[in-house]
Length: 416
Ligand code: FAD
Ligand code: PYC
Image 1 (cartoon, rainbow, N blue to C red):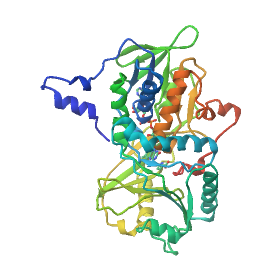
Image 2: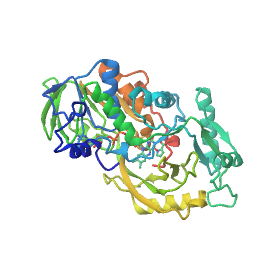
Image 3: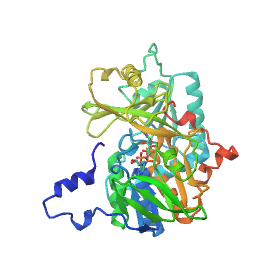
């Protein structure tokens, strides 16, 4: 998504008598009960649940660009909960359950489509790892099943399972409840629902400093639109979290990498499901508009560039053409990148910080879109109560001091 729905609507309304009351463009108030920094899906969901479930309506979401213009509008929208460890199963499955009813909850069609996510195994190591995930998930009551190559082809007919290929398919793990949703609709749906409950969503408002009182607690934020007071600040600034948290003197265990994706020209429906290959860094689905949505691996160096390296793109397209020979002649329309922030154990950080009144939600790396509803839901509870929601508790910043890491490298779907 490269445009702002609200900015476009504002232009369209210029000279037509101004804004209808239901489309107000709020100016910052001098003080809020809570501020959420970052109007991506996670930040907007956090604000929505603060208002809807915790009665906190004097809340602002501050966004340096336009809402949904970060990773939320740049990702390949894959949703699944087939993670290995119980802590991860809990948060991603919490999210999948919220996806199932989200359009109704927000009264906005987020186009959640549980069409099945299939992860391909190309090596004996892949087979062992994915089968371990299948068993772990089933023990936790989460659907995941093992398919032979022939069953994988039956589920996804365009898939090439010829034995002599460069990336042979030895089997696949299938989560039937996995799927996709429309990314910009998720941002708009949460934004509209939060706005209806009184939340101020303030775009073009970059936070440039975090002010603290004599006791060290948060007292407000410096922004490009002036100082705004608050005693509770939730930082949800994927990719830029280290920069923001440094404003309060907190050092984060994060690295930022470009991750890229691309879409093809629209074609008739050809891909019935989502297919991912962690080993060769390629994943593909087809949007309702008909575009093939393809994602690659991260660049190998840290950067804040919102574009990925060309050699990464060509590697992914080589792999896609071998896995799906039917798509060899399909033309690519556009590509782009986002900046993902990655933790040492490839699991997110959600919770309190050493600074009173400062909360953080970050480190979703290449896989946070699927978590949007669950992440916002537990982060709102954490901010409202001042202590971690039970599902968020294992994902504390403190785990990098205690060593209770949640190593999800194998489930990350994209090699880092
Ligand atoms: P964002 O949407 O990035 O929101 C953060 C916001 O903070 C931004 O809008 C930014 O402008 C704002 N901000 C930053 N600094 C400041 C500041 N100082 N002041 C004010 N605002 C600020 N995940 C999946 O689950 N499935 C996928 O298929 C998938 N594919 C991906 C493909 C690509 C190419 C990329 C880049 C990511 C992918 N992801 C995927 C990851 C997913 O997109 C992210 O984890 C998720 O969208 C993060 O959401 P967010 O709301 O935290 O971040
Ligand atoms: O986490 O499922 C995922 C994913 C797919 C592509 C990037 N991340």
